[in-house]
Length: 228
Image 1 (cartoon, rainbow, N blue to C red):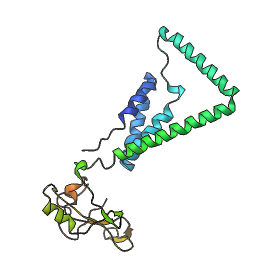
Image 2 (cartoon, one colour):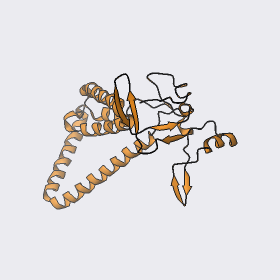
Image 3 (spheres, helix red, strand yellow):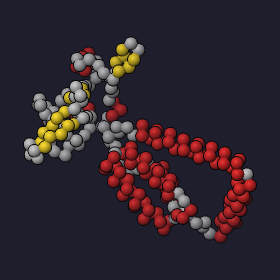
Image 4 (cartoon, one colour):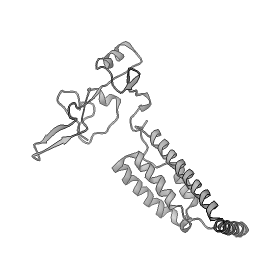
């Protein structure tokens, strides 16, 4: 499944529902521009979360749609009266109002955080084609689960189980988890702290677009490297 480059549709509809028609195009254009900047810099998960926060923060009286037509005047006056009465009741019962409003704010904040967490989990690694068919092998030692397995297991699974189409192994750079790299073109040296050894089949399971080089032959030869 290929990752979508669009923000959550539910919040786009919510924004268009409450925003004034004359302001929708201008504000939505700015929202989408900011979303694509976040998408490019930080990825879809963080971009979606920031979009949701921006839509919620924009929800204020200054951009609400006005009441339309004379048929809505009575309803508008009624709601206005309700808000006045509610506000007066809040002022006359400050302690009770504080407890209720605080509880409501905490409840809403908790719901929003849970929703953002679920959205992030549901969008995890969606950019990998056929990501729902990729599985990670974990081992259990003395009842404790480790995200590790013996090296020969990958080839053994592929050989003994026909439903395993392809396998690949990842090993983080050992020692101090630092790899010293040197750029002869720019005469610079630097440490890479997030390096992995992988099999040549890595790009057969995981979907990445290379700016330079061919994804099908990038890791075919020994001593080759792919840089982000």
